Length: 206
Image (cartoon, rainbow, N blue to C red):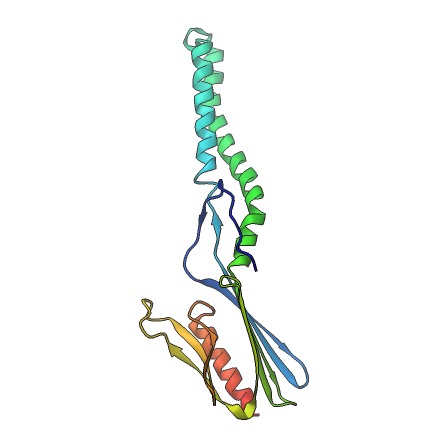
């Protein structure tokens, strides 16, 4: 669970929050929910190295125009230089984006993985056992625990007190030992958490 080091040339845009998916797996006596969230990490090659490559070509073409005294050349030569000024910087911009996007792809994916969060919830009806595993790659931590159904008082979604975002919610499991946060405010949308709370409540009552 090591923190990914981004190369110096790679600038990114990282909006707040995680893109969360919920995968449901069911067997004869077991129901499993896998909730995984990854940050949005977008490369900015189009905004950095694209313009840099275009500017480099403009400087190069300007130097060639001075060296070859384009103004004193024939109209055909002047036409080709004008066409080059119009086409080559745009082409360089596009090629730079393609090249740097390919170079950045593995780094962006590694950073998404290094800052991902996951919660795996399993309800075993036959054993009457609730188990969960929470993995936070950002904190390099993992929590895993099993609880008997008899020790669980229910699941609910509660707002986060003091959060800047009024829609910030957590999925809580009430147990005899206290509250367990299954999904924090970053992992999962309010709708996903409400659906999961209903699913858990229904399975606990079976």
